[in-house]
Figure: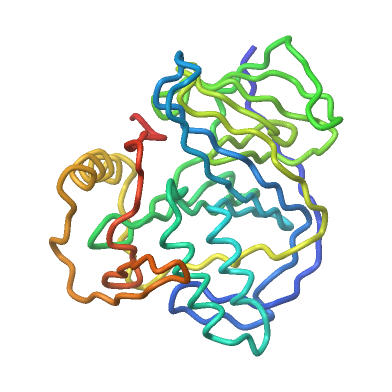
Length: 288
């Protein structure tokens, strides 16, 4: 059966401080997380080959009152440092470099609005930052399968979304309509998911109750609004060329920094990493 789900609201209190890129936010605009969930993302370049290359990264879901944020865990750690009062700027800069040097980085930052049932996707594609809005997925099909994950009873659900066929496992014991990436809209938290090709898997790594912050919603002034179709056209054109050629067209400024391990990273324009590293090649999370 197909279901359009009516989401439940979860209440928390507001507190803290946060800084995103070059945008300073006052402490009153940051809320502590009701729940933080860390997912392990596996990108399998040869899904049918047990010895095939697998890239691993970690993705953070931060859940607040009526919203949530999904981003790379390295980005979340940098955001958490920025939230500290009187933090040594050198520590923030070091974290930024570690984040920029991370291989197989989870590229999008996604703001999920529970009341509007919308997601706002933010992602840089050189030389610019872009964002677009889309609704929560609603075409979920509930399956009959069930299994236990980390002590939670999980139920099966399937979704055809962004050119991939997903199987997700959600638990009604945590009645939050979120999950890794954009796998939102179910009547419980998604703890695991896999696409039908086996290329992309999300596994539960850790659940943290009432620890850390929920990054506030920030739309950089330099970001361009675009529709989803326009963004995907840029997205599918850019990464194959970056892998084979590297791209610098449209770059108007560059800052070079060296990390603790001696690795050099280059930031272009509004703090966009000039060249992300995907050593085994790039797998498109969104095919269409």
